[in-house]
Amino acid sequence: MAKIDLIMPKMGESIMEATILKWVKKVGDSVEEDETILEIATDKVDSEIPSPVDGVISEILFKEDDVVEIGKVIAIISTEGEESSTSSDTSDKPKAEPVTVEAPVVIETPKPAPQKPSPVVSAPSSSSKTSVITSNGRFYSPLVKSIAKKENISQAELDAISGSGSKGRVTKKDMLNYVSNRGQSGVSAAPVIQQQSGSKLSSQSSSVGVSQGGTEIIEMDRMRKLIADHMVMSKKTSPHVTSFVEADVTNLFNWRSKNKNAFTAKYGEKITFTPIFIEAVVKAIGDFPLINVSVDGNNIIVKKDVNIGMAAALPSGNLIVPVIKNADYLNLPGLTTKVNDLANRARTNKLKPEEIQGGTFTVTNVGTFGNVMGTPIINQPQVAILALGAIRKKPAVIETEFGDVIAIRQMMFMSLSYDHRVVDGFLGGSFLKRISTYLEAFDPNREV
Image (cartoon, rainbow, N blue to C red; front, side, top):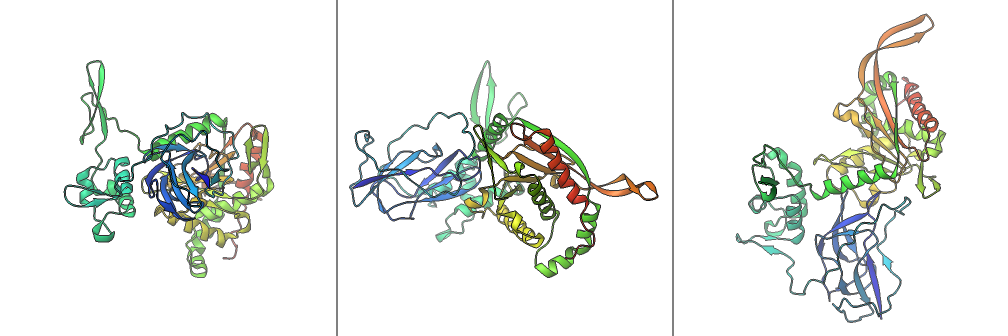
């Protein structure tokens, strides 16, 4: 007879908490090893949490919609047929060593200031329903209702969504597709508005979204709140310094324009500039390995693996950072295949949790938005992030054997934000310049 603690697992870089979307099992239910117990969500991905053992759900310590810190016990599983108990008084009973759900990432950075823990709540009763039925006779799962609540989708909107599930039920995929296309359909959520009344503020829902003072107050959704917290944590953790260079990328620009059709015909993949840039970054990391590190207290953790994170824009407007593992072992066609695959699955919300973990350096392309440069925020626990600006035709001075001339060239700004605790100006500036050198030295006669 033993009791096993089910721990909230770590689901990605810099993610310190997750939201419980749905309890698939309730107190008293039997579970088999690897059977789903609950569904959780972070600002990056939604995931199902499996049982680490065979047993019976003895206690559930948090309710749906609770935000729980990584590493906290969220449920207790009794093994060897032990009867479950809903009693919360377990202080006098010895527990077995905690068994955590398998998660491939180890926290390697100093932990942020502890947050106030979520309160322990009693387990839901066995009579609680697993689906919700509305007045129009349509069923909605708790997960669907949770997404609707988070995205501020009204009941009328929910009823109008076409379901692809059994008997026309709305699924999680239906909800995510609806949210992604919501802005294009012209239907907007009813924001939470605070209107000034005398010296006090009163909260109310409004479909107009404009108060008497001519302002609109919209409550952040779950993903935006978590992103905000992570950005603030990164700035508090790392003293940011940003360096800039301008690179002449005419040779690689012309090479891609000339060979992109031949490349697709040979490898079955469309080549963008991103894998070419990542190839140069990987070479530069080989020259300056102390860029590929993290910080743990007073220790510098040098990473032997070169795992490149590439920021990808989601239909919602948020960013996600899938990771190309062991990028230093891939040639240009291999990098192109990985970049296209991860980018496509990021846009359709099909990334696996392990595919956004383990990054050691991040590249973000602000040129996608027409920006010429940026000052990106470091993706903790990494110590540097590279921003690539838009490639633009500009007049530039070129040194030739006949003297200096002015010519039209394809120019691009690059900026590197780095953690000044461990990366000084010499290392950061030299690394950035080395990337520029590799790009400018691109062979225009390179074979496809």
